[in-house]
Length: 145
Image (cartoon, rainbow, N blue to C red; front, side, top):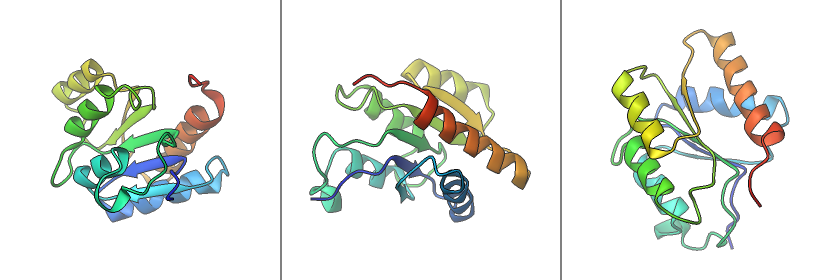
């Protein structure tokens, strides 16, 4: 059976995805990352459908990094589905996006997002921000058992 990764990264921009994965792996805070490039894949993964039907039940990611503006299903809809599902809602979800639009921020928090981070444009700031997120959510934060 397919196991779950420590981090589920849902990001359609391949450059941002690569930088995010490198930043997380660089600090040795994550053992495995699953990268999906659209919201439909993320929902299939989380709900064990389609190609992810063999994923082990109950082995959810420890952290979801979620972009908002994606093809097929946007990040807000993915967030909504996660937070309305009992066995998924306690997974920390960090929106990691280029959108600093107030309506997006308000909607995400009203749906229960754990954190909303606007992607820094500068490379070093991006790496530092992602590293800090990984350290906090995977090492410092104490999730429910």
